[in-house]
Structures are given as C-alpha cells and as structure tokens.
Image 1 (cartoon, one colour):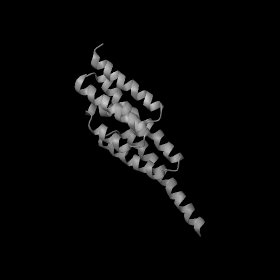
Image 2: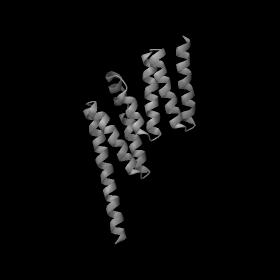
Image 3: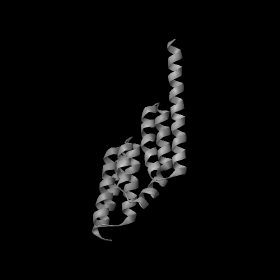
Image 4: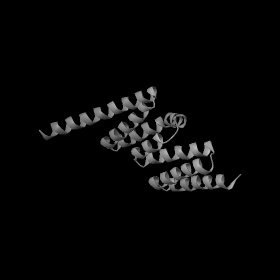
Length: 153
C-alpha cells in the first residue's frame, strides 16, 4: 500500500470520528478535501467515489443541499449518476426529518435543489419520488396555513 492511499484513508477515518461527534459541516469539508486530493494524487476511483459519497451525505445531514449540488455538478457524468441513485433514500429521509421538525420551508428548498439535480441528469424514477415528496410537503404547508388562518378568526 502506498503512502498516498494511506493518507486518503486516514482523512476518511478522521472524518468518520468527526461525524460521530456531530460535526457535520467540518466532516463534509474533510471528506470533500479527501476526494479532491485523491482525484489529483491517488487516482483510486474507489476511494474518490467513497469520499465524495461521504461528503455529500454529510452535507445533507448538515442541511446544506446547495453544497451537494456544487459537488455533484463537478463530477463526471458516470460517477454523478451512480452517486445520485445511491443517495435518493438518504435525501428523502432528510426531507422527512425536516418535515418532522416542522421545517417545511427548508424541506422545500432542499427538494427544489435535488429536483433540479435529478432532472438535469435525467433520473426519472428518482425525480418522481422527489416530486411526490415535494407535493406532500406543500400540501402540509397549505393545511397548516389554513389551520392557522381559521384559528385566528
């Protein structure tokens, strides 16, 4: 095993420790740096893919969907499709979490970002799931708004 691979793996392991302590933005940056460094120095597709996947997942957990979009758009089409297909359940779970916390606006903002990503990459079945979730969250927002309006009368 060469020193470059050991270095990349050490960055990922350190990121895992930070993730477990709830430092999601810090760990997302670390994973992203590991992926970018590996793509320049190591050229090991497995480590690059794993580090980008971990970075994206961490940005989702941190509530920073716009950072996910930036990473995804910088990847090759082949890797982008694989990662987007892998992440759909993680994205839907995060939206459910935001919905449960009554943070419907942030859920809609995230959905809009992800809908654009999945649309731009022609991932129709995943796009359908995102659109269905978006309609559901919008319906909840409307019901909540109507309930608040009738309570004020």
